[in-house]
Image (cartoon, rainbow, N blue to C red; front, side, top):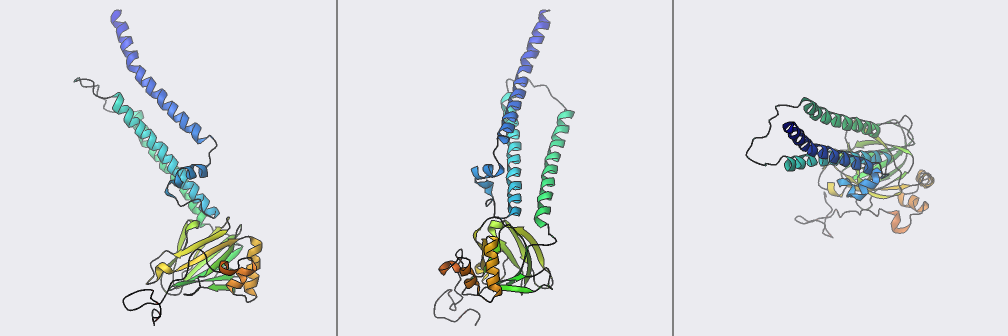
Length: 318
């Protein structure tokens, strides 16, 4: 009888740490779940931790979807990481060496091995599912976009053609072209579906506005890359070529100006009437220096034989 009581006491003493460990795990999981459900949005989490390395929320609906996917994936990875680290440290403390006696050896634990196999598969499946949804949404093309812009890249500048329809057969109703003296300005409205159709005059370039969290290569020949965005934030943003295209690749910039629909219509009507880009910018309230690019500036194309950007010399390429 006494021996049985000792065995029961030893068994309860052995199971007590396990029960405490399970309770601690459940408490940690419950605390994490309550934190996630406490009303903090994805943007709140991202802002609190510097967006986890992401540039920011972006200026388009598509950028918001990519941002939310990134932040949610990072939070999920951190939750899994904290759980794994917790188990590691718990095992290190709970099963540390207490003597020379060899502990009970377990060959396998089938339920635990199934859990370790199924859980990662489920995590990858969920991430793959939401990644496919976001990618499909970002690449989605509408049948009738509100605006169509043809992006023409050339060494080393940009031309933006406002079109009356889709495809190569459409007509250009207004155009903006950059030069070595004037940065090209692309004016677009917020709240509308904008289709970009890209083509190059010479080599491969890449159309990139960092705040859109998206870029796409611009190919020469018959290939016309197409994508759509819906901008939702007014402002001025620098655009760049993101594909090494030659000597002045680093200076191949433009400026994206997002305005309200009413101002965009005024701008486009002024362009259709023969106004220059700067004159049309003045019509919608951007006068003086604001009629030109403010996020980037033209580069000096003049150089000497062994030095760059020197005044009173022959222009590059001449």
